[in-house]
Length: 257
Image (tube, rainbow, N blue to C red; front, side):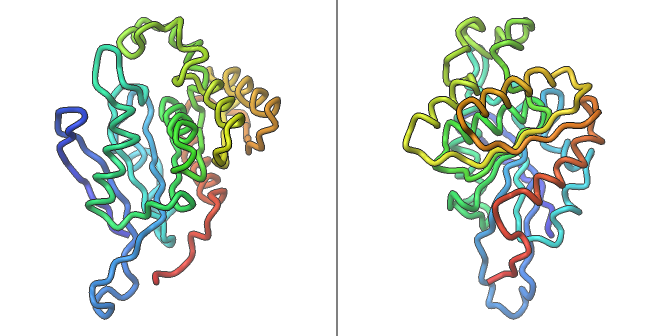
């Protein structure tokens, strides 16, 4: 695998941004004429207090994908909640539109729905589900690890969200509400991405995750859900990301073409 630290300019944000990319290497690059494959891709999103380096620093994600043909893209979005902020920058447009386009222009990443996945922890869990449910035509699977899945509740309890949302009391039922987004996809004729969620039973977000799980079941959505005694900690996410990789709907052991 190759580990690449990429600094680039974002037109959407109007500033320089960064991402780490884990990229499979050709098995025999010296004798294949320089041909490049198009790799299935996992967009791996960080939490509220982290940046694009968090997954690399706190887990063994690079080692977990070393023998696979999976590329992993880890962008930085600051404390944006993966949202076009009311008093800030357009981070949802960045993560949903500009980042994939930039990443694919620089690296051999697949643009096929069945080869694009998104996962994240905490704030990134919210971002992963939001991205997949807003664009179910682009992602075949989404995973939330201890995700902040009920942002309508959380935002009312924190003054910080006044910078993110125009009106925290109007999130419920909007396109920023995961419960409503799941309703919309179920009612539409769009394919529903495969969904995974997990949360420790001692996590302060456990109740929110239980409510999202019950909402999914009420809608008849088949969601893979895991929980065990754990808090909001990296040791739990390091273990769960391995489960996510095995759960992805693709054979990651396939050799280069």
